[in-house]
Picture 1 (tube, helix red, strand yellow):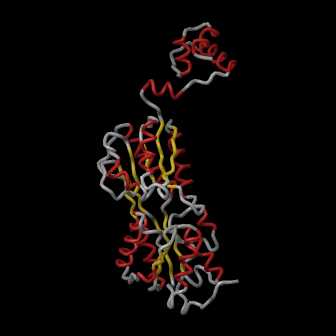
Picture 2 (spheres, helix red, strand yellow):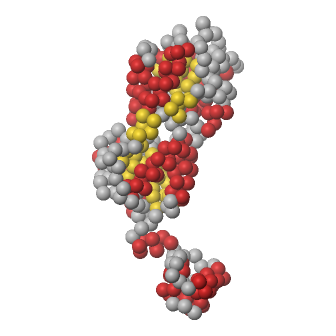
Picture 3 (cartoon, helix red, strand yellow):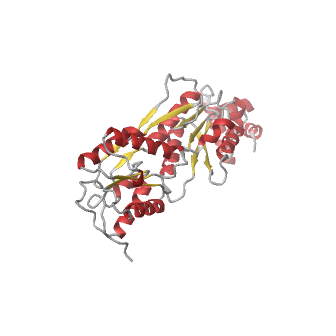
Length: 344
């Protein structure tokens, strides 16, 4: 069934059917009811994509995220809230995962495929996986937004202020009396993890706390990685009395290791996460963390992208400030950490 057949059944012109489908307000209400009755009767579905291409607008944007193993819901939250923001503004979202573990340049492939599908702009929210775009893709003249990108680009880039939250977290631990502060760093070949690492070093310097590289455990930022990293820190001759984690998932993994050794976060050792995922408030104990909310960042990214699509220029790039969130997984250091071994 096509527009011509709809027009014939309704006894109107093809142009009238087209105006009804596109909700043109000047069409006679009687004709609108007649055409819609035929459309409903035959189950006709307009090809909105073809119509959009004919108008030169697809009202579709691209979103590229990282596919992370370990059950991390961070990017699922990004997708959910980015799509909600898009739908509220009449846009559809084409989503792609940057599988840089098998192909370092896969994010470039994702961009090229989205351009082929006529998206009006792309948000690249991969936090360190987008560096391949620096040399292999020119973003000038096409709306694109990054978050936390470190390479030189004329595209819009949301600056991530990691220091704001980390500084408050370190200050909090220092006020409790912690001087041996450890860190589960995540893999430092990712630029986002290197940036957090350097921000932590600066935060500790500002707080007057010595940064000890021996108290850093580089690990996968997953549940398993956090569990393994905490085990390494606890095996040190003199373990840290507080540990900051590169994300909430690593912190939750660390809690598992602590419990296996009859230790408790907030009582035997202080623990701080990063992200403030919804589940952070439901761990036992509730996790003190640094807020890097995917919901807020997704909404900000879409707003910046929409402004670029609509030709609204900004004098400066937007900034997302991380924020310290106090719960129950931190406290004063024990006089001496109890020597324990894993439960069998």
